Image (cartoon, rainbow, N blue to C red; front, top):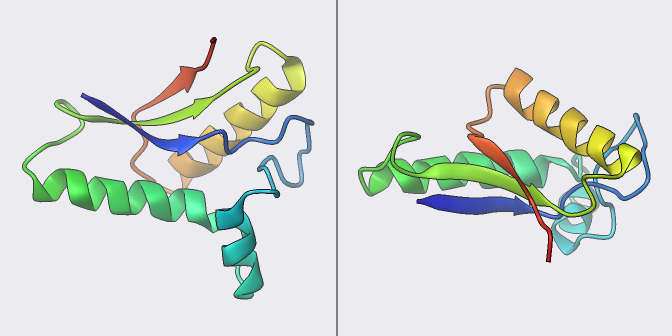
Amino acid sequence: YDWDVGNEVASDTQNAQNPYRTDSLWYAAYASGGGNGADYVRDAFTFANQARTSIGKNSGTMKLMLNDYNTELPGKRANVMQIVQQLVTAGVPIDGVGFQSH
């Protein structure tokens, strides 16, 4: 199984300061509470991992994925890579990246 936990979270325009889409309702909700809007992605993966574990699954039987579009474009790809690197560095349970092409 795979679970698209983070979907379309990267900004279309390359931005090393903030690679996330800021027009997301989740981003806005986290930011309005005085926090970092991007933390919703970290929390989504953390909560998904807790749910996965609670049903007896693990990274070998259920992958937690970050999914995005236009990853063939350099700016978007750089943002996705930066987000993944941030998540991995923070110890967030992310198992893979999906590329939309529809």
